[in-house]
Length: 152
Image 1 (tube, rainbow, N blue to C red):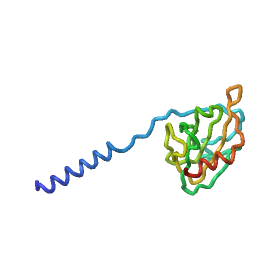
Image 2: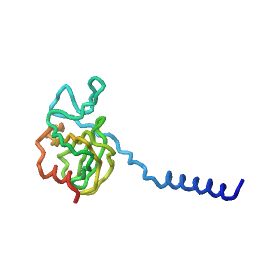
Image 3: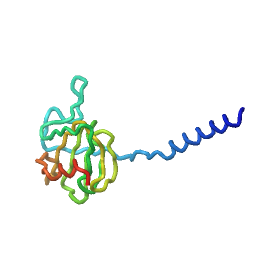
Image 4: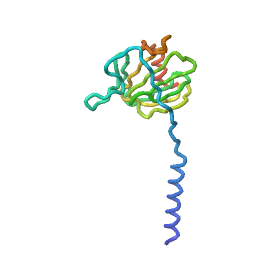
């Protein structure tokens, strides 16, 4: 075998090993399931006639056109139902942010202003923990949405 061919093969192999070994591994976050106070027949994550339900009553739809979504404050991003994630924080333990339609979610602990994913059309809901332990959909503030849609 020609020495230049051997060097090329070894160099390619070294690059492949480095790329595979240096690629960040996804954070293995456990799905978080919450009990909603309000109950409707269709929920985000359901499938109807082969199509995913990405929003529901109480969600706000935002046409992001592939742009980023940012952590509004320090917290944790976890899977929820298919196509949905939940953002929680110890700083505001009685609130959860439900985000549906997000692509490439960055699960795990996130700092304020850090990109947590992208979306073409984001379905956003704010959940508030009730005294009985269930979660209720409540109206989100414009300020929270602005923090999630603008980089810092």
